[in-house]
Image (cartoon, rainbow, N blue to C red; front, side, top):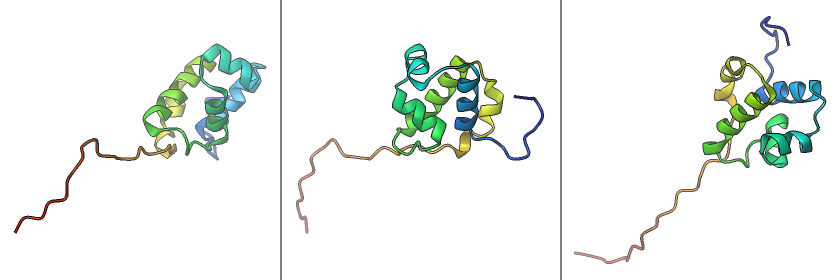
Length: 101
């Protein structure tokens, strides 16, 4: 890709897919070499990241970019637009309901 600013900015997943295809890698091959699950790579490339916990998502995107030798500065600019699954908050303590007057 050129260093010229894009008129229509690419999502990180679009850039990942482009670079993977330029290297002639299948999702399965990229998964084996990067050690990231194929379902995660497919989700990143498609932009359908709603099922990936947000705690891990940006790390997956950065690691995939490093594997593909993509300039991270171009990815970081669009990272705030990437959304993952938010964790459910649960209590680990049991609370007894006692009424005090």
